[in-house]
Length: 168
Picture 1: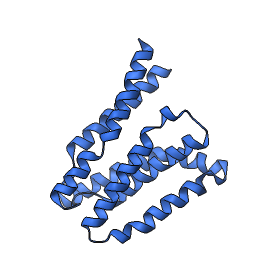
Picture 2 (picture 1 turned 90 degrees about the horizontal axis):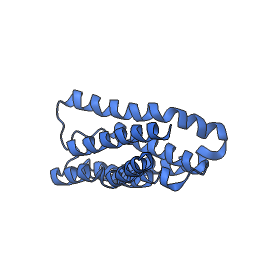
Picture 3 (picture 1 turned 180 degrees about the vertical axis):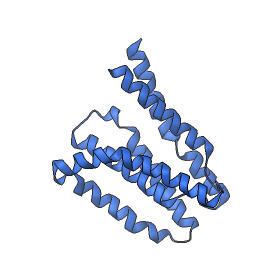
């Protein structure tokens, strides 16, 4: 029973992550606007995902334990490009994407840097959500945000919690 629950959590999380940002991207494309989406939030989220993925690769964890992160990163990059496109400055994404690519190679140069980054990743993820909520509070307008994306993200967080309890 325990193994079946873990298998269900793994596969359902992977499935949800495969489509996690698609409602958000669809909402942005339909609205032809990135109004309501916090760029700092998106950049922090992308940084958190990148750190987690790099850490997992560095320590050679099994692929299945982090397979959703490359999918999430690809979706976040697509959303980032949409945000810059609808803000009228696609080239503005280049420095950020360059910084993310560079960090992929810089993080593992020293063991302490990748470990420190991983220790900060929870803070980075929380800061991402706070930045988005601050944007919503300031503008008073959810704009092109997708409630479905936030709901799916909540599901994956609950599954991650269930997986960690199942493993102990």
